[in-house]
Length: 363
Image (tube, rainbow, N blue to C red):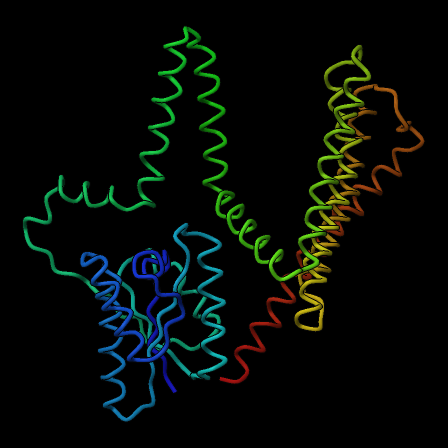
């Protein structure tokens, strides 16, 4: 059996037409394409879905068993959208054990996820859909206006400009222009960090997951709250020890803050991962493969962090438990921590290789 796969990486189908992926079957894909075309006639994904149906019909006429499927990602293109595409494709392959697939693309963005599909099934071909445009649509002004209607592009281009104008305007109105420049630098820095690492989408996904956990009575929600509380305790412990030594040098106070806080943060991380592992165990009857990896990483980070912190205190000549006789112990802690972190990476690659080999074996 063959599959014709169309990928909507930014989930236009869900946002505009209210159709959740994966969409499987000729009739279902045609219906989804009609809904998306009605909601936004200019969306290229509509043409890609029709092209997928046409290719499916061509393969069927040749006598091969074939079906068509549309995979959807997330409006915030990145790690989360690609993960959703991979999970949907896994579900499709469970119900439709195909031996090969043809991929339909309407642009370079969707093709970024093709390696995810390559790792799961043999690919017989990639078909690109190009939309012919009239001369009037090719004007720069119209193209820019149409592009700015895309919420993703607006968030990446208009939002930073709006932050700059708003911050500088408020600073100029209150006569504190330098504070405005400082605040602007901090704002843009936070925005770039959130945008680079998809933190905003991770927060939204965490809130949705927490809402689901509450409704289902999942133990993960309780563990998550406890983990957040431990992280907060870590900040308070660090703050208290810093305020309690006002005459120390800034670097010593900073090191004391980290020494007091890090252990709470590490315990909170382990509690968080334990909650997720217990939830998976109650649902599937086995612990997730990521749990030993996460536990090993957290332990390794703990050894390395404390070894480095006490080593810095010794090198700066600060008072503390680190003396010349304890340098071998600090070096051993750092080496052990790095070894555990490397072991977690090796373990992760091992599990990935096993998963890929087990997926490729039926084909």
